[in-house]
Length: 382
Image 1 (cartoon, rainbow, N blue to C red):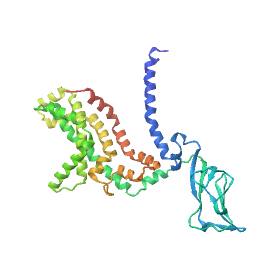
Image 2 (image 1 turned 180 degrees about the horizontal axis):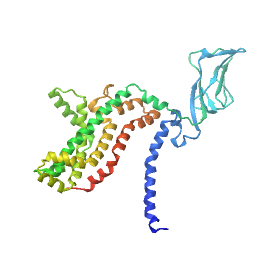
Image 3 (image 1 turned 180 degrees about the vertical axis):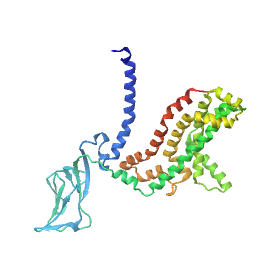
Image 4 (image 1 turned 90 degrees about the vertical axis):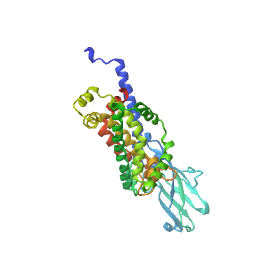
């Protein structure tokens, strides 16, 4: 065997470590996807790793009302099936939430007023009474059943067909695209100036920009909003507009963008800049003809981060754009679908997958620049 073809233990360790990390990062996504296509009752009954096995659930079924009763040999009967066309096996049943497994399947339970209830293992039930059933609502039947795995696309259908979801999708794109492009343009100019244009206070400005990276967004959000509303009122610009959220996202994204781009641009070969100046090129010409084409990796890597941040944002959008039906972004619309108690896991999992489609497209379109841009910006300096 050729000596070069034998892999060292360190190589195997690295490969296994990478494989472990890939599985570690992929597993939650797989769980999210499997949960999104499971039946909503099974999501709350068992974890996604049991999706292919039968699950045991406690459920409630309300029998038809007295208007569905029939008389058989002097006995009034209401019958049906607790699964309503679904599949499962009833193990036990009861007539109270305190004891939903009081009777075995196939047994007959004596209820009040001589009413008897029988539930078979296949879900068939039979309510009998010597007197006619009265009232408007049917008897509640509590049962414990083994339900086979059920997969459905109804969760995705509920999210996609929700009212206003299309408008919110367009609103999110209207916010995310300009809020990604504008900071990149501004930051690229600033980064070139800080890297290659000597002027007094350049180092101080760079230090201030680096310091702004640690300012929490939540601390500056309200002062920024008050400042925007005050300036907007002076110029007659209404609040809650796209202009406000574009400027807000630009302000929050600029420190990181300038820091990354400045480090990358400062690492470009000095000989190229000096040759261009000897040939009479101005700073604007050098920036547009030389620096920008050479900075695509750094620009693309920041574009991915900024788009992901603005697309998934909820807090800034609610503050600067509002929560009206015409202005609500996609994340806000999905929050409303969850309800006030946030218990609709089937909506949460399906909507999570729908919202990552656009960021995934952006990532795969620009991912070849991502590593190059991040590494160059992190190790080079001027």
